Image (cartoon, rainbow over all chains, first blue to last red; front, side, top):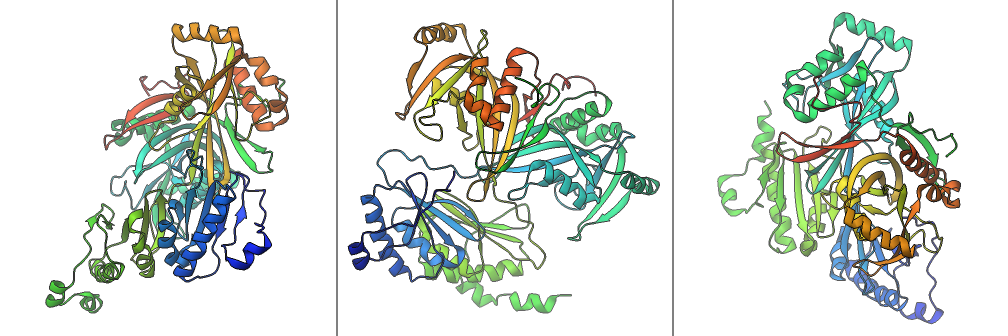
Amino acid sequence: MSTSIEKEMVLPENEVENIKLLSSIEDAHGGVTVEMKEPMDSKLFASMLGSSLLYWIQQKKRGVWIKLPIEFSNLVEPTVKEGFRYHHAESDYLMLVKWIPETSATLPANASHRVGIGAFVMNDKGEVLVVQERRGRFKGTNVWKLPTGTVEEGEDICMTAIREVKEETGVDTEFVKVLAFRQSHQSFFRKSDLFFVCMLRPRSFEIQKQDSEIEAAQIRIFIVFNLFLFFLQWMRAEDYAAQPFNQKNEIFKNVAGICLTKAKKDYTGFSTMSSTTSSGKRTYMYFNNRDFEPSAEH
Amino acid sequence: MSTSIEKEMVLPENEVENIKLLSSIEDAHGGVTVEMKEPMDSKLFASMLGSSLLYWIQQKKRGVWIKLPIEFSNLVEPTVKEGFRYHHAESDYLMLVKWIPETSATLPANASHRVGIGAFVMNDKGEVLVVQERRGRFKGTNVWKLPTGTVEEGEDICMTAIREVKEETGVDTEFVKVLAFRQSHQSFFRKSDLFFVCMLRPRSFEIQKQDSEIEAAQIRIFIVFNLFLFFLQWMRAEDYAAQPFNQKNEIFKNVAGICLTKAKKDYTGFSTMSSTTSSGKRTYMYFNNRDFEPSAEH
C-alpha cells in the first residue's frame, strides 16, 4: 500500500474555530491517518476523536488509521470505544483502524508470516559447513545442522543467509540459489512460517586457507557476539545427510537429500535478480535462470 | 548463592493468602502466558499484575506474555506501566510481552511478511486466463493481468492460488508449480511482501467446455460474491506478454517472460510435496522435483 500522495487536511475556516479536530494526513485510498506525537489527556482525546469521526464521515472518508506510540497507551481504550479495531503492533506502537463506509472493508491485511533461512554452504571439496547449537531445539542432540536464522525487518532473504553464516561461523559467503522452501502454520500463535533453503559458496581463497586450519582441528568452537557457543566444522555432504536425525525426519531428510543432490550433480534452484519497481524501490526476484534469461528476447 | 535476592522476592505466608495472582499457564521456554478471559477493573488488574510479576521473578520465569482481547482495552495502560512492550496484534486482541532476565531477550519475532500469489493458468491451446479489475492499482489501465490475491491466515500458497482463480474467474484449477517469487519491502508500514508466481492448469473437460463459451464471447463479465466486477478472457500467451505495460515494467516483463518461456518450452519451477512434522502438523515443501525425487535413494 502506497501513501506517497499525502497532504495535510484542510478544514473550512468556521469549523476550525469551533471544534478541535485531531490532525491527520490523507492517503491515496480515500482514508486518513492520525499519528499521535504528543501526550494527551484521554478524555480530551476521546472528545476530539468523536468530533473528528463526525467530520471524516461527512467527508466520506473510508479507512481511518490511528497510530499510538506505546508511551500513549492511555489512548488505546478511548480509541477502541469509538469502534476501532487493532490492525497490527510492533514493540513500540499500536495501529488501530476503523472502516467508515457501509460496504465491506478493503483494508490491507496484517503481516501473516515470519521468514527464515537455512544456509547450505559447500566448499570445493564437497564439504558442508555445519554447526551444533548450544541451546534451542537441537541442544544436546549432537545433530550437525545447517546454520539457520530469521529475516530481519526490511532484509532480503539472500542477505539474511550471508549474515547468519557470518554470525554463526565467521565464514564470508556469496549467495548462489534458493534450493527449496517450506511453509508451515501456527508456528507461534496464529502466524505462519516460510523457510528458505539457500545455497551459498565460501567467498575467497583466504577464507579457504582459514578453513584448512579449522579442518586440522576438525571441530572448532565459535563464540558469537552474544556469547552463545556454536561448534562448527566442514563435514562431507554424505556424512551430513546420513545423520540418523536427517534420515528419521521426513522434512530434514528431503532438505538433506536436495543438498546432496546439488553436491553430486545438477539441481536447478532459483537465482536472484535485483530490479527496481515503478516507485523506485529495489526488490529481488528469485527464478530459474537456467531456463529463462531476462536479457533474451521474449 | 543468590539467596539474599531470592529472600526479598519471597512473599510471606500471610501475604500469599491475601494477594490474588493472575492465572497463567507455563510454556516450554520457561515463560508464562496470561490470557484474560473475563473483564476486570483496571486498578484491581494493576495490583494483581504487580504481585504476579514479583512471583514470576522469584520463580525465575523468562518471557511473560499477556493476551488482552480488544474488549479489555482498559487493561492495556496498566500492563504497559509495568514495563511490558507490544508484541503483535490481530483485529480482536493485543499481545504484550515482558522479558524478565537480565540477559538479552530471545523472544520469537513478530510476523514480518504478507504473502501473495499471481496465478498463471494456461489451457492446452496455449492461452492464459487473464482479468481486468474494476478497482485498485490497474483500474482504467486496460491491462490484462493474472489473477492475484493474498494468502489468508493458515492457508497454503498452492491453495490460495486455486481459491483466488475460482473467486475471480469461476474456473476450477489444480496447482502445478511455483515459477518464481519476489520479495519487496515497506509494502505497508514497515512490513514486507513475498509474491509467488504460480502455474495452474484448468481442472476438467467440463470447465474447458464452459471456457469455449467464454471464448465465443471473447470477454466475459464476472461478478464475484462481493459485487466487484472482473472482466476476464483467455488470451494467447504471446499477446499477454506483449502488452505495453508488461514490456515497460521490468518486473512485469520478467514475470510475463517466465510465463511465456513455460508456455513455449521447458521451465523448471518448484513443485509441492506435503509432509508431516514431528509435532503432527502438515506442511508443504516446494522444490525442483525434476532434479530431486524424494522417493529415490540418497
